[in-house]
Amino acid sequence: MAVTYLGVPARPDTRFATGMAAVEKINVKGLERQLRRHVVGEVRFDAGSLAMYANDSSNFRQVPIGVVVPKTLDDVVATMVACHRYRAPVLSRGGGTSLSGETVNVAVVLDFSKYLTGIGEVDVARKLVTAQPGAINEQVNLVTGKHGLVFGPDPSSHSRCTIGGNVGNNSCGVHSIQAAFYGPGPRTSDNTEALEVLTYDGARFWVGVDEEQHLDEIIADGGRKGEIYAKLRDLRDRYAQDIRSGYPSVAQLPRRVSGYNLDELLPEKGFNVARALVGTESTCATVLQATLKLTPGLFERTLVVVQYDDIVDAALHIMEIRDWKPIGLEAVDHLLMHDQQEKALNKEGIEELPRRGGDHAWLLVQFGADSKQESLARAEQFVAWLREDKGYEPDRMVVSKSRQDGGNSDDLWEIREAGLGSTAFPPDGGDHWPGWEDSAVPPAKVGDYLRELLALYDKHGLRGAIYGHLGEGCIHSRINFDLRTTQGLATYRTFLEEAGDLVASYGGSMSGEHGDGQQRA
Image (cartoon, rainbow, N blue to C red; front, side, top):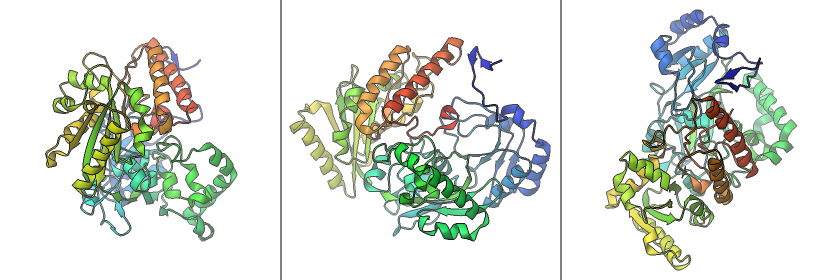
């Protein structure tokens, strides 16, 4: 008989034991004893810890087997040795900010965020920095910022998310477009130089970029690394043409995050194992350290907010604005404004928006430079182009400097940064959930895609504010799915299947930065 939940058929994969069936095959007491003997950090198997780590920011809840909070990298190795001996799965966890369920599972959870937070010295000449997986994204940028450099991918959770999580998810962020125009590229994979990794069977080694020229030598040296590289090369050679034809380039689809980065193994990509591992979400190896590529900071910033008739109209103007090479190109719609007003959020920023009211939408176009004069000049040139060449009325635009320079751009940015929280449980709209909150298409197609996506909302009687990184074709939207009734779950499944077909028809990705996780696996 088919397994069901609230009457909705499930589709289990019978090859794998999951949940309690997996735990029943493991000597949990023996595993706990070995961990307590060999791990200096915290080993937690108590009910309270298991309950706490059963959740992240996603829709999912799965009780782990146990939790290890390592104090040293040797603790991580000891944990892996114990888990391998007892055949227990291992899951890496950073800040727990995942919306896709990457950091909850029936596994031994490794929480890197408490102790393994080290950030190395910045190599200014080579624009590199090495960080441990528990280092907070924002803290890394505070360190690198002293040298005029940044790690480009900065999710809205930058004050909480970790570098390990960024690597696991292949994260992006508001300033990924800055890294695309002025640095290595938009995704964490594009901004990764090398990784120190640990395999499930305890092998520890560095994987670096551009290893194609040394591939024969690495394989000839043997060992676990040589064995793995030989198998990866065979995989690459067998499917090279399929990979070339099936993987859109980052130039075509900047936010291609779903799936494995097998294209990084191609000869023309330099057999880039480090970047191939980014986005694998703890399924292939555990990351111990990451050497990251950095982008010029361009810290003198000016914001231009431009009003459009609706979110589709705003999206249709993305490509011409990209030609101005902004360091941020974000969008918010009228529903997001409504939800924030209902929660009494960001009153000052909302009052600064041009032409409030109606079904309007706004693009937030940020310019950066090394000097205040240059940043402001670029913004003013952009506004002059909108007025003189495009015929925009002056009241459709607001130019704002940062708060430290006497402006209010910080208030305006807070509207965008509050997108996730303000749309979760709006007072008058019921619960809104992740599920189709992170799709991405080529920027040139984002307007047409949005039009069809909103029609799909209407078809299924759904509501969700639209905001996000439209400058790179990535759309965020928490939707009022009914996840509590049989009919609601059936509608949820049907919507996701149709939305998946829709984004595929546009050559897009089901995830533009949040990763696949359990949500899209």
